[in-house]
Amino acid sequence: PQGVVDLPTFWIGRFEVTVAQYRAFVEATGHRATDPTPLQAPPDHPVTSVSWPDALAYARWLEGELRASATTPATLRARLEEGWRLTLPSEAQWEKAARGPDGRIYPWGSTPDTAFATFGRRGPSPVGTHPCPACPYDGLADLSGNVWEWTRSPYQPYPFDPSDDTATADEDALWVMRGGSFADDARNVRAAVRGGADPGARRPFLGFRLVLTPP
Image 1 (cartoon, helix red, strand yellow):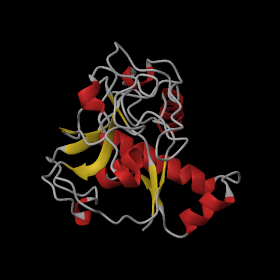
Image 2 (cartoon, one colour; image 1 turned 30 degrees about the horizontal axis):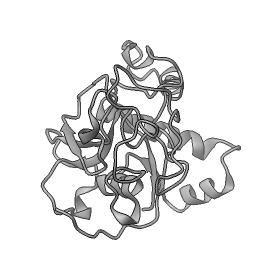
Image 3 (cartoon, helix red, strand yellow; image 1 turned 180 degrees about the horizontal axis):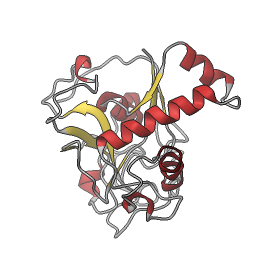
Image 4 (cartoon, one colour; image 1 turned 120 degrees about the vertical axis):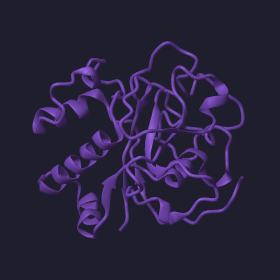
Protein backbone atom coordinates (compact mmCIF):
# COMPACT_ATOMS: atom_id res chain seq x y z
CA PRO A 1 0.00 0.00 0.00
CA GLN A 2 1.07 3.55 -0.65
CA GLY A 3 1.70 5.99 2.17
CA VAL A 4 3.45 9.24 3.05
CA VAL A 5 6.76 9.20 4.92
CA ASP A 6 8.71 12.26 6.05
CA LEU A 7 12.46 11.73 5.81
CA PRO A 8 15.29 13.92 7.08
CA THR A 9 17.83 15.07 4.51
CA PHE A 10 20.30 12.38 3.48
CA TRP A 11 23.01 11.92 0.85
CA ILE A 12 23.04 8.81 -1.32
CA GLY A 13 25.80 7.44 -3.52
CA ARG A 14 25.45 8.26 -7.22
CA PHE A 15 26.50 4.73 -8.15
CA GLU A 16 26.63 1.23 -6.75
CA VAL A 17 29.90 0.39 -5.01
CA THR A 18 32.35 -0.93 -7.58
CA VAL A 19 34.72 -3.87 -7.61
CA ALA A 20 37.68 -1.45 -7.52
CA GLN A 21 36.31 0.34 -4.45
CA TYR A 22 35.62 -2.92 -2.65
CA ARG A 23 39.06 -4.26 -3.58
CA ALA A 24 40.67 -1.27 -1.82
CA PHE A 25 38.77 -2.24 1.34
CA VAL A 26 39.82 -5.90 1.13
CA GLU A 27 43.46 -5.00 0.51
CA ALA A 28 43.50 -2.49 3.38
CA THR A 29 41.79 -4.70 5.96
CA GLY A 30 42.14 -8.30 4.83
CA HIS A 31 38.37 -8.66 5.13
CA ARG A 32 37.44 -12.08 3.73
CA ALA A 33 40.60 -11.93 1.64
CA THR A 34 40.46 -15.67 1.04
CA ASP A 35 37.22 -15.30 -0.94
CA PRO A 36 38.07 -13.91 -4.39
CA THR A 37 34.50 -14.07 -5.73
CA PRO A 38 33.52 -10.39 -5.24
CA LEU A 39 36.70 -9.23 -6.99
CA GLN A 40 36.48 -11.31 -10.16
CA ALA A 41 34.44 -8.84 -12.23
CA PRO A 42 35.96 -5.83 -14.05
CA PRO A 43 36.91 -2.97 -11.70
CA ASP A 44 34.20 -0.59 -12.96
CA HIS A 45 31.37 -3.09 -12.45
CA PRO A 46 29.21 -3.16 -9.32
CA VAL A 47 30.64 -5.48 -6.70
CA THR A 48 28.39 -8.48 -6.07
CA SER A 49 28.44 -11.68 -4.01
CA VAL A 50 28.83 -9.48 -0.92
CA SER A 51 26.82 -10.35 2.19
CA TRP A 52 24.89 -7.84 4.28
CA PRO A 53 27.55 -7.80 7.06
CA ASP A 54 30.27 -7.43 4.41
CA ALA A 55 28.51 -4.36 3.00
CA LEU A 56 28.22 -2.78 6.45
CA ALA A 57 31.88 -3.56 7.17
CA TYR A 58 32.84 -1.72 3.97
CA ALA A 59 30.72 1.27 5.04
CA ARG A 60 32.40 1.44 8.46
CA TRP A 61 35.85 1.21 6.89
CA LEU A 62 35.13 3.94 4.35
CA GLU A 63 33.72 6.23 7.02
CA GLY A 64 36.93 5.81 9.00
CA GLU A 65 39.00 6.57 5.91
CA LEU A 66 37.01 9.73 5.22
CA ARG A 67 37.37 10.91 8.80
CA ALA A 68 41.13 10.38 8.70
CA SER A 69 41.87 11.78 5.25
CA ALA A 70 43.10 15.34 4.80
CA THR A 71 41.48 15.43 1.34
CA THR A 72 37.89 14.78 2.46
CA PRO A 73 35.72 17.66 1.14
CA ALA A 74 34.85 20.22 3.80
CA THR A 75 31.09 19.77 3.46
CA LEU A 76 31.40 16.02 3.91
CA ARG A 77 33.78 16.40 6.86
CA ALA A 78 31.33 18.78 8.53
CA ARG A 79 28.52 16.23 8.27
CA LEU A 80 30.72 13.51 9.76
CA GLU A 81 31.69 15.80 12.63
CA GLU A 82 27.98 16.42 13.24
CA GLY A 83 27.47 12.69 13.75
CA TRP A 84 26.22 11.67 10.32
CA ARG A 85 27.17 8.09 9.47
CA LEU A 86 27.93 6.13 6.36
CA THR A 87 25.79 3.02 6.03
CA LEU A 88 23.33 1.20 3.81
CA PRO A 89 20.20 3.14 2.86
CA SER A 90 16.98 2.42 4.66
CA GLU A 91 14.26 1.07 2.43
CA ALA A 92 12.46 4.42 2.64
CA GLN A 93 15.60 6.37 1.71
CA TRP A 94 16.22 4.08 -1.24
CA GLU A 95 12.66 4.44 -2.49
CA LYS A 96 12.73 8.22 -2.10
CA ALA A 97 15.89 8.36 -4.22
CA ALA A 98 14.35 6.13 -6.88
CA ARG A 99 10.81 7.51 -7.02
CA GLY A 100 11.28 11.14 -6.05
CA PRO A 101 8.46 13.16 -4.51
CA ASP A 102 5.93 12.11 -7.15
CA GLY A 103 5.91 8.32 -6.74
CA ARG A 104 7.20 7.29 -10.17
CA ILE A 105 6.87 3.75 -11.47
CA TYR A 106 10.45 3.84 -12.74
CA PRO A 107 13.00 6.50 -11.77
CA TRP A 108 12.66 8.10 -15.22
CA GLY A 109 8.89 7.81 -15.68
CA SER A 110 6.06 5.36 -16.24
CA THR A 111 7.38 2.96 -18.90
CA PRO A 112 10.41 0.61 -18.95
CA ASP A 113 13.36 1.83 -21.00
CA THR A 114 16.70 0.09 -21.53
CA ALA A 115 18.26 3.47 -22.33
CA PHE A 116 18.13 4.19 -18.59
CA ALA A 117 18.69 0.79 -16.98
CA THR A 118 20.34 -2.61 -17.44
CA PHE A 119 17.73 -5.38 -17.31
CA GLY A 120 16.80 -8.45 -19.32
CA ARG A 121 20.48 -9.20 -19.94
CA ARG A 122 23.06 -11.84 -19.06
CA GLY A 123 25.26 -9.65 -16.89
CA PRO A 124 25.63 -6.21 -15.28
CA SER A 125 27.02 -3.07 -16.89
CA PRO A 126 29.78 -0.79 -15.61
CA VAL A 127 28.29 1.61 -13.07
CA GLY A 128 27.00 4.81 -14.62
CA THR A 129 26.54 3.26 -18.07
CA HIS A 130 23.02 4.69 -18.16
CA PRO A 131 22.93 8.37 -17.11
CA CYS A 132 19.41 9.34 -16.20
CA PRO A 133 18.76 13.07 -16.59
CA ALA A 134 15.03 12.31 -16.49
CA CYS A 135 15.32 10.72 -13.05
CA PRO A 136 14.08 12.71 -10.04
CA TYR A 137 17.61 13.44 -8.83
CA ASP A 138 20.00 14.03 -11.72
CA GLY A 139 23.29 12.20 -11.29
CA LEU A 140 21.90 9.06 -9.69
CA ALA A 141 22.27 5.94 -11.82
CA ASP A 142 21.33 2.26 -11.76
CA LEU A 143 18.62 2.47 -9.12
CA SER A 144 16.60 0.28 -11.47
CA GLY A 145 18.35 -2.80 -12.80
CA ASN A 146 22.05 -3.64 -12.97
CA VAL A 147 22.13 -5.33 -9.54
CA TRP A 148 19.76 -5.60 -6.60
CA GLU A 149 20.90 -3.42 -3.69
CA TRP A 150 20.99 -4.23 0.01
CA THR A 151 19.20 -1.90 2.42
CA ARG A 152 19.47 -1.69 6.19
CA SER A 153 15.75 -2.42 6.66
CA PRO A 154 14.42 -5.79 7.79
CA TYR A 155 11.83 -7.34 5.50
CA GLN A 156 8.53 -6.63 7.22
CA PRO A 157 4.98 -5.86 6.10
CA TYR A 158 4.03 -2.28 5.35
CA PRO A 159 3.27 0.33 6.66
CA PHE A 160 6.77 1.70 7.03
CA ASP A 161 7.95 2.25 10.61
CA PRO A 162 11.07 4.45 10.99
CA SER A 163 12.08 2.48 14.08
CA ASP A 164 12.66 -0.55 11.85
CA ASP A 165 15.60 1.14 10.13
CA THR A 166 18.16 0.49 12.83
CA ALA A 167 20.20 -2.37 11.31
CA THR A 168 19.75 -4.14 14.67
CA ALA A 169 16.94 -6.59 13.91
CA ASP A 170 17.20 -10.25 14.83
CA GLU A 171 20.17 -11.82 13.09
CA ASP A 172 17.85 -14.34 11.45
CA ALA A 173 15.80 -11.58 9.81
CA LEU A 174 15.55 -11.19 6.07
CA TRP A 175 16.83 -7.85 4.83
CA VAL A 176 15.19 -5.82 2.11
CA MET A 177 16.85 -5.55 -1.27
CA ARG A 178 15.64 -3.13 -3.91
CA GLY A 179 16.01 -2.21 -7.57
CA GLY A 180 16.00 -5.46 -9.51
CA SER A 181 18.93 -6.64 -11.59
CA PHE A 182 20.29 -7.29 -15.05
CA ALA A 183 18.63 -10.72 -14.97
CA ASP A 184 15.13 -9.40 -14.26
CA ASP A 185 12.39 -8.33 -16.60
CA ALA A 186 10.78 -4.89 -16.67
CA ARG A 187 8.29 -5.74 -13.94
CA ASN A 188 10.98 -6.43 -11.36
CA VAL A 189 12.94 -3.24 -11.96
CA ARG A 190 10.00 -1.03 -11.02
CA ALA A 191 10.89 1.33 -8.18
CA ALA A 192 8.27 -0.13 -5.81
CA VAL A 193 9.40 -3.76 -6.08
CA ARG A 194 11.04 -5.22 -2.98
CA GLY A 195 12.81 -8.47 -2.30
CA GLY A 196 14.33 -10.06 0.78
CA ALA A 197 17.49 -12.05 1.47
CA ASP A 198 19.12 -13.57 4.52
CA PRO A 199 22.11 -11.56 5.76
CA GLY A 200 24.64 -14.16 4.68
CA ALA A 201 23.40 -14.26 1.09
CA ARG A 202 26.10 -13.75 -1.54
CA ARG A 203 24.51 -13.56 -4.95
CA PRO A 204 25.93 -12.63 -8.37
CA PHE A 205 23.02 -10.22 -8.87
CA LEU A 206 23.14 -8.48 -5.45
CA GLY A 207 25.32 -5.47 -4.58
CA PHE A 208 24.91 -2.21 -2.67
CA ARG A 209 25.33 1.55 -2.54
CA LEU A 210 25.81 3.75 0.51
CA VAL A 211 24.11 6.70 2.16
CA LEU A 212 25.31 9.38 4.51
CA THR A 213 22.49 9.71 7.00
CA PRO A 214 21.95 12.09 9.94
CA PRO A 215 22.08 10.88 13.54
